[in-house]
Length: 256
Figure 1 (cartoon, rainbow, N blue to C red):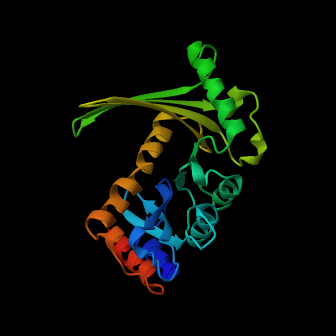
Figure 2: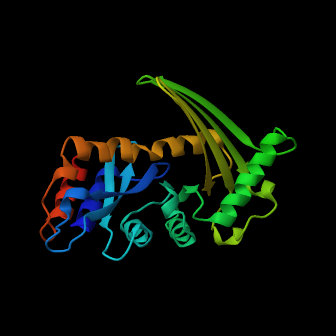
């Protein structure tokens, strides 16, 4: 059913060239069966942000994880020219190679699950900031957003790979062109938070374009997952026999 639905949606949407396609996982918390020893169903979904449509969805098999499910999802889709975004769990060289083989670009989060590379990138940006990026080629973007009793400031620096003079196991990241740092400061009514995140991308160092892709990655959480939880009460659904949970989720996501 997943393959048929993906084919139908691909026909409906057409070319994904230039489209930002976030990929993310979600558990159907109500699909577990304690008596049968069945864990909650976990699905990985690809989302077309501009059309606000789910492109495809695959099940994470038992005793597996999203790292093995993401390539299966990529294989279902015609992604030529698309920009794939992933959180840190999906930042794996094999997945990057698969994205490149599909003739797509990527913007993926870099966190401490790649400790050596993460530390190297973090230290480099700290030194570059301390010297105000003196003598370094880079692209910069700043955004200020207000709404929902919140003020959010975002700074994005995109730096060409060549500026780093060689990164840990650099050759394993196929197509890598730029390294990105994003700083977010959120002023809420009762507190202020600050976070810094790093990203790898096959796109040239364009802070505005890459920053837009990073922001739109959250569209799958804020739109697709939220609609499923609030409108369809997906997490509260106790449908759990056979393929029913997965098929139900497929039908619901296709209607978001």
